[in-house]
Length: 300
Image 1 (tube, rainbow, N blue to C red):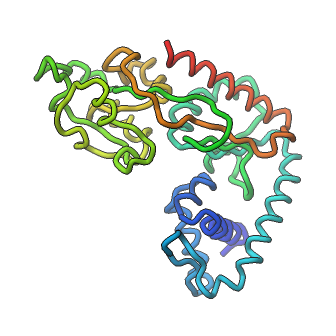
Image 2: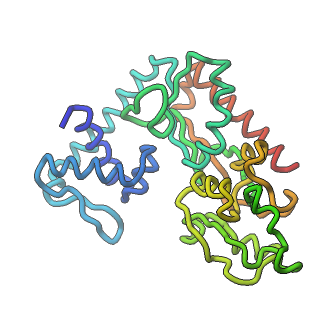
């Protein structure tokens, strides 16, 4: 293993143990759970021994790892402190870990506007961008839920592609959505604080049967591609589909007042808020302004 790969594998191991699962570690590191697992496995292959076992309360260290656990945690605590000190000097770099749907459907379409005004600022968002992923905590984290600063709470409403818009009410004038193909997000099925079709139908009663049938997608950004291709109808956040609506790739089935409110807000946490670099402060202020604009748009 190269030194960089070795450090990334140790970082994945450290995060998995601290957070109790590959999924939580992936959320912290801004990569997929599969990537976290691969990094840990590569380290296990290199050492020739298992390092993690799954217990009732989450991932646990094996007996072989327990002897090195204290040093592992101390090393990454120290590494994070070193990273914070050195990265403060890298004035034009911003590292961000964010909810993947929020990042791809809300942030990235808007980001060129900021980059045009500030061309020297470089980004790494969820491990990708103009600069390589670094070890250590990100400058900014945006999550669906959590305890950070609230950006906005989305309104959830049905959307479809241009061809599917003409199918509404074809079969039943009262239950207009009866028999139409529904698309879902996996979190809606798993009750992971993600509301979907059953919740929306409960409020507006435009369908009777098959509310949980249809194709399930892991992320809204993938489901929205199916919407654009007229595969089916999706309940999604208004803020996340605004670009598609403006470009004519997706349409609201009903007026915006026919919505349900998301159970969680998108929230932003800033690393070391009392030591904001000027470039980072500009970006944080820009996100806050964009979030205010979004709140206004979804309330119209």
